[in-house]
Length: 277
Image (cartoon, rainbow, N blue to C red):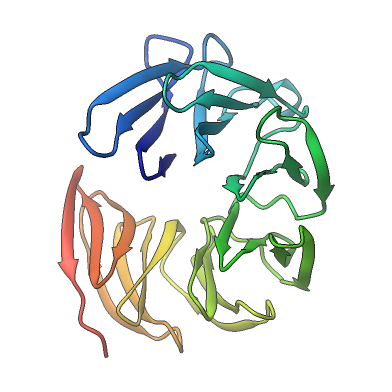
């Protein structure tokens, strides 16, 4: 729900407790000043902003909701002027949810029941492609989009054409992490899988104690995950062997920055420096 450009940092929230809307906040990257706040307006009870992306002077966001059946949900994509927060356009496709949104070199990619390529100026659809519907969303690396659902999908952003698909025997429930060699994703049964980024073939799998939460983080030759029992695991990126295991109360949200692993522990950020092998 966070997007960062040279000028802006934008963050999308879930709905506020007393109001039936979520908010998008936009800050100056240089000063930290709050420039504007945008509200989604009254809508589904549990509306949230799931994805935010910035590009060409605009901020784009996609919504979701936990309220009602899939037929009752009506998520949408909006474009706002990044400087003022003024609404430029809104579009929706009568789908249950979005699982990815990315601005890239003059195109806006929205993943729902299909991967739709939108005109970022108007919101009109330029093209659409089969790209699965997994809740793990997609991730961009080296001008390619990767997603995992019933298959591993690779989509070339330079040509706007599929690169490959490769079948998998389980769908991930976490978001996807990517390196120059692997895609990593976890599921609700405690499996963490590593797939070859260039072919989509699974390289290794490791069963952990319980559901893998959040997106894995790769730091210093290790892939870091947190499971549903608040156990932090560090696994060898090449083999999947568990090399570190520790349990902390209320732990989530691993993020890697260079050789530093960031975790939220009991509601507070905690940083660990990780040594390479």
